[in-house]
Image 1 (cartoon, protein in one colour):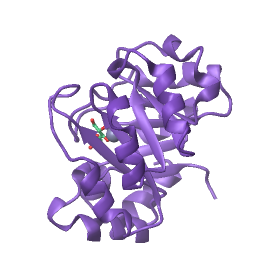
Image 2 (image 1 turned 135 degrees about the horizontal axis):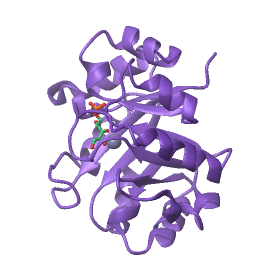
Image 3 (image 1 turned 120 degrees about the vertical axis):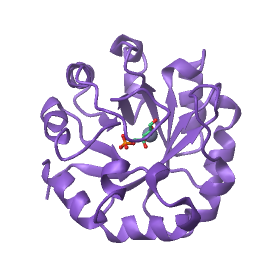
Length: 213
Ligand code: DX5
Ligand code: ZN
């Protein structure tokens, strides 16, 4: 059994049948449900908020992996915890008080992660890495599904792995059967995939990603 975990992003799901889509990825072997929250300020796109997450929470026991692409996420952590998040990821670029927001997330007894945009150096993690359950490396500029994988991500994954042997490293953006292998080799273990999973047979595609090709 590989220790690669797959987190399909519901950004590419059919929103008119979101509950059914979450059940379908669960049945297809997903490990996490990756939930992209966008506010139109931190990223140039708006998706959905806590009420939508709460509405589908009862459909599956999978880990709800909430990726906050919102400005000053500290304002909404409690709402997302109440909606059923098991893991909350905030962007290093989205808050002045990154250490504080990590403690805020953990105070609810759930997992905390920090995400870095493609241009943000790994150094920013140096003094907080031991507080983190996961680091999310953006392999595209956040805001949209279906973009092309940025190659410098590979070096970045290696740099995070040097900082910590044990932290989960998640990669998000442009993950397909063509790009996942080199990310696994570099040291990542959790993969977000939106357009790749939702544009084919869910089980076939998740299995293929888990095999690393
Ligand atoms: C992008 C989101 C991603 C997105 C990935 O801002 O954070 O989670 O859904 O989509 P794909 O896998 O299509 O690149
Ligand atoms: Zn995401």
